[in-house]
Length: 297
Image (cartoon, rainbow, N blue to C red):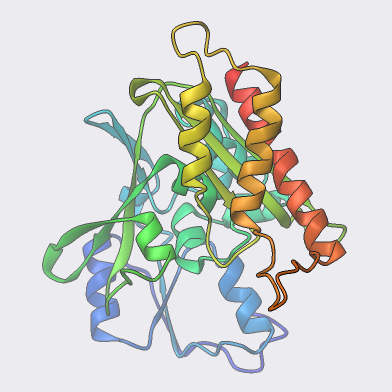
């Protein structure tokens, strides 16, 4: 598996259907599913994981594409970042395509998959705030051909976890046919790893704004009050007009909701945020402001 790994996996199974993969995982509870392997191999090479068996998902063609379904896009969990970054996909779900193009260097984008990004649930996963803002739903494959649906936010928050033998099969995303934006700020180290990211989508049908902030917490954060506040200020009947002052206020509202002020001391004084945290809050405010401005323009 790697020249750095002192102990390789003992068995590798390559199922060709989703139900076959579930059956293998059910029969071998200790087996680890692997698609692109970008996170798995990092864990193996660092000594954090020593799988005794692997279930490769790369030959399951049914989860490597997408289809239309009742005003939604049904995305296979095996879609790679590189595939999602192409123009035809970008015309379908622009924010998700933008996050896929920002997911790292070419070898990561060519191997990494949508389902892997969700299952790993790393705070810096670029697709996660986009899926949260889109209010995407996961279709989970279980034993005996069973399928169940859960909101992606429930899985990321630990409200509903994958059960033994289950796999993420598909991601259902509503097609809003409206502007969507994904922006992120990166640090000086790592291959484009986000310090903070913002996904913002407009929903003209419901006259709503949906925003999610990634990388600053264990899961993507939804500033719901900020969304509702700015949605009421947008002139949806007049080219979605919004006064410039509201853009700045929205950015500050989002940042303060996601990175709140410290709890007051016993004497009533409010301690200052550490410089690094204050800089991060300013970064989130700038990203949210720019994302909304681009979406409205």
